[in-house]
Image 1 (cartoon, rainbow, N blue to C red):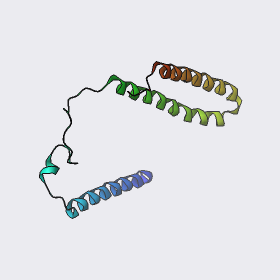
Image 2: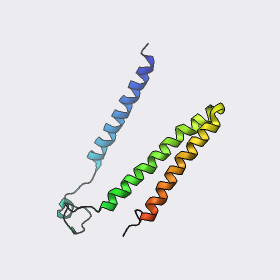
Image 3: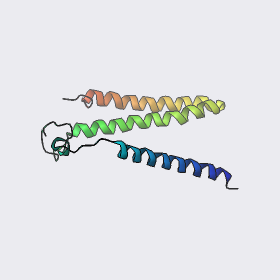
Image 4: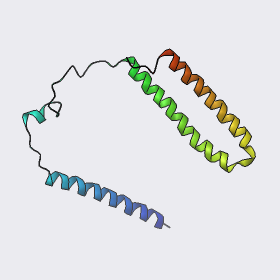
Length: 121
């Protein structure tokens, strides 16, 4: 009854043990030397250019939201493609549905392109 779960449990134990082993070995075998340069906030040794509390431009958040929007588009297309292949009787309806969806996204894309939201100044 619990045989499929035992395999998953063994896999989880193996993954956790492997992660612990790799972390432990890297800690034991590493040649970490603390130097004044490495203790600084930026370990690259570059001088700090400004405050860490600086504000980001609104364009940064706008581009991030647009990325999420168009990422959701691709997440919607994969199950649609599976349904399109497995439901041959509804192929016409599914095709029209996806064309309408892509047309709405294309209008949105052209709108943000014309408004200059993708231009980074």
